[in-house]
Image 1: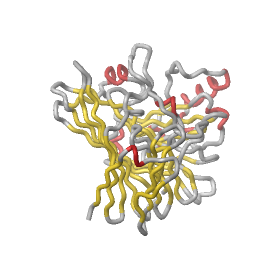
Image 2: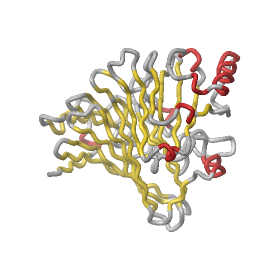
Image 3: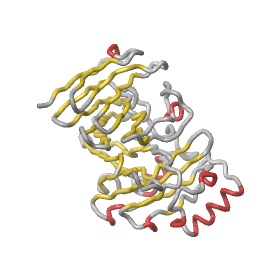
Length: 338
């Protein structure tokens, strides 16, 4: 049996209120002091906080006492038009018309329009052993693009993982460009080691330097060594060298199988972060490392349809998706603890 519970903004208050509770789940609604609505979902293994009307960001996620979320300076999610206005979430939807860091010639916002999109509708779906938060937003511009985006977050009762989904439908009478990344801002695991189902040498260091990166002499020397031997960075044992950020790309993932899995293992081996996805949906992936006083993030994998270097770079590389009128694409990522 499936139960669908619509969500309305007036249901959210400063004091959390229980929407539903059973032996598997507790779902609470509350509003942050900044005015952002939030849904807190507990299962037997942990807690996930999702912002149902704000791009359906996943603000926090933790399982078995381990936080999956990056370290950051935000006490709460803040209203904004760009993801940098509220960069403290565990995951957000990057894209959809354009994705990643815009070049000087691009005119799109950092990580696209979906990250902070105002959702039109949101609802909870309760099934046997599973609860989902779903939603949709319709993007339309006069003489421009028109699409429906339908994200979802799903948790099972006794699992320390969540499924993050996105479905995009082109509602316009003309083709639509599509770039999408499931941007997972994973926690920095000190001394953590990377493991994955693809070869280590599949990762190549980003050699371009975006405008927001301010290189130091030590960082340049370190990245010069990494460019010659990208496989030498397999452990998070030099956080001081990850400021500014270190970025690796892995492309053409379908050559390694229909599905790929990436892991970040704690040094005690008592737990590991994991992410799994389809290479048909996500043929590219990025590894993003940053550690300073304000942010501590080890995004060991960011599944994507292309490299996150902006719209024009994807167009030039031939990795820009074109959705025909009425065409739909679906994306799904499983992430959590191994």
